[in-house]
Image (cartoon, rainbow, N blue to C red; front, side):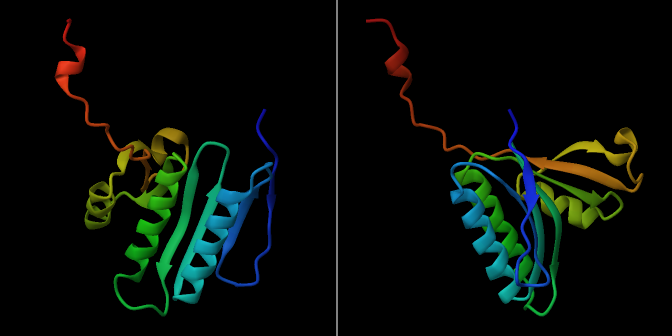
Length: 144
């Protein structure tokens, strides 16, 4: 059964965090730490954690140097991979360079908002967790 979600107010004004109540709060603690760190580095990050995915609501470089937002996003993706969680986000469908950048990070087009009844100018992107593939020798599967 899904766990209820509650909003946890944080001290940093640029951070919004939806926290899932669960017996183990380790992922919530790690995500909260990432959000606080991002805010301290000048990157506004809004992430919702749901039962089976992370939803990237917003990321914006505010007072940070160029590339800071990309670094924070990579840290979020690494955290999602560690917990085997997919990441989803809505992106302006007309921003081709932005879409290509997300694609280069492993996101794929899941659907357009037009298909889901949302804003027609946005696309829903998804990124599945990266699992390291074990090295398996073909000889292991040969009959003796």
